[in-house]
Image 1 (tube, rainbow, N blue to C red):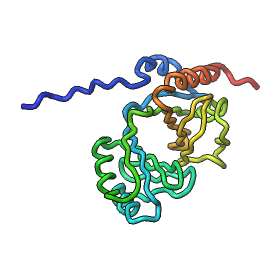
Image 2: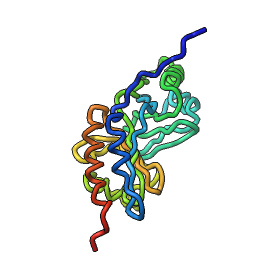
Image 3: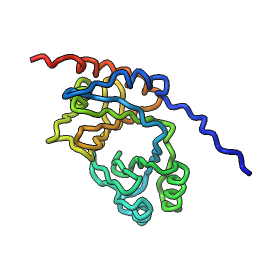
Image 4: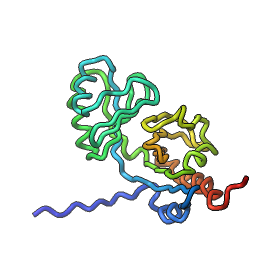
Length: 202
């Protein structure tokens, strides 16, 4: 009988789990910050109008988004546009399985499929005050008229480069910083959340 597999991975923000939980604000100005560790992330490069792209779309069950800021979703996969021939596949499925399937779909065509799951982590900021917290350090116009659920763009929050994805209209935002910058970003967000504990200043 095979020995059970032990997952020895430690997420980039495991040491801040309690601080993030303690930073939670409830009520009308509520906001929460949590880490979603070990999300599968696969960087994909392929010519968009190619047979290889068609095969990849069939494999993922969703079209590759063709415009800046757009995402598509099918089952466990969400595909975010990074450039004219580049996408980030975010998935709840096993990273090795997703990367293998995409490499098989790419075949011998020009392009690349790279498992970058260890390169970033995922922070989720959610609640009525989440947009106001982000607006303290994000140059984007995050008003719903400009940034709505399903949008994902590369930007900065504070001094940290992230992929920012609005998951729903709670609003819930998912931020994908490089793992080496995750600690700084989480502490920045915790500090930005702190004022919402008090009453709103008229």
